[in-house]
Length: 195
Image 1 (cartoon, rainbow, N blue to C red):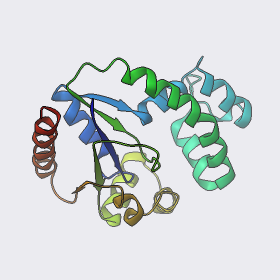
Image 2: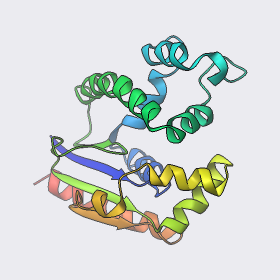
Image 3: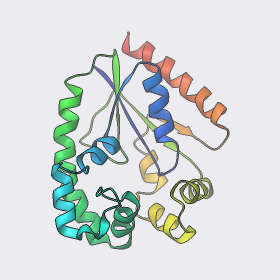
C-alpha cells in the first residue's frame, strides 16, 4: 500500500491537513488521536499516568486534563521521557491494528515525530514560521508566551524535521491558501498511488 508519513511542528497545521485528507476519503492513522484515546479513563495509559502524577492532573469529569499533563511534561524533561516511554509502545501496537483495517487506495500516518526506521513512499512535512506557531499555541491553549516557547523548544528543530521531507509545505498564509497547497499534494499522492 502507498503510504504517506505526515508530520509537522506544533501549531503548523497538521490537524487541519489530516482533516482535509479525511474529508477526501483517505484513511489517516493519527498517533496524536491514538495517544489521546489511550489516555481516556479505563485505558492502559490513563491508569499509569494517574498513578504516577496523582489525581491532581484530572479535570472535573475525572479525565486527564491535557493542559496540565502538557505543562508537567514540558516543564520537566524526565516527565516527558517517562510519558514517551509509557505511551510509544502502546501507541505503536494500536497503529499496526489501524493500518490492518485501511480501505482507502493510500493512507497517511500522522505523528509529531518519528525516526529513520519509519519508511514511507512519501513524507509530507508541514512547517510554519516560529512567530506564527507561538501565536497559534497561545490562542489554541490559552497559555502564556513562555509556555508556548517551552512547547516549541522541547520539539526537534524545523531544520531537523524538514530533513525528513520528500514534500515540504510551509503554512504561513490563509487557510484557503493552505488548502490549495494540500489539494496539490492530494492529487499528487492519488496519481502516485494509482501508478
